[in-house]
Image 1 (cartoon, rainbow, N blue to C red):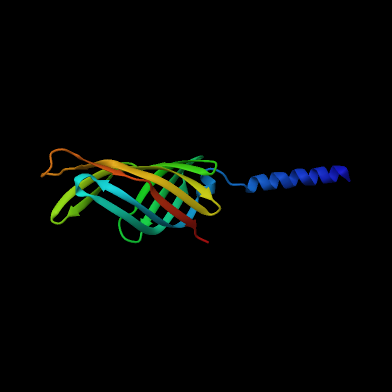
Image 2 (image 1 turned 180 degrees about the vertical axis):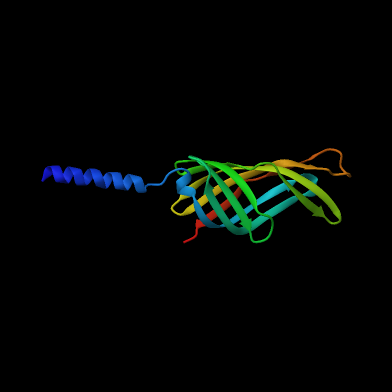
Length: 158
């Protein structure tokens, strides 16, 4: 009887450990997200971010993930990441976007970096934006792009 109990306990522990997701497998899935924060565009002022949409997290390697953000309004963008246990560390490739103030067009070049954690079925991602405004004929000195902490909450879709 004692031997049967020992075998049963061992099998139960193996089953439970296999169902514990960690790393890239934990984050993989479809989410609805909301992002808020402020980005500073040098002398052009501040731009408040309030964005929502769909997020797809795909596993691309053992610990590697790609986060594809599809905002309700705007362009799709990607962040590459490394998932370790219940955390994900993300960084974008260089992103180039056009930004218009009145009738003047500016070109923004920036990167997004950040860290996220999984809490139940919700990702809490805290990120920062850094870069420059380039290709600006009226201003020869590059304008710095920076941000305070930008917060994204993403709830797993059922």
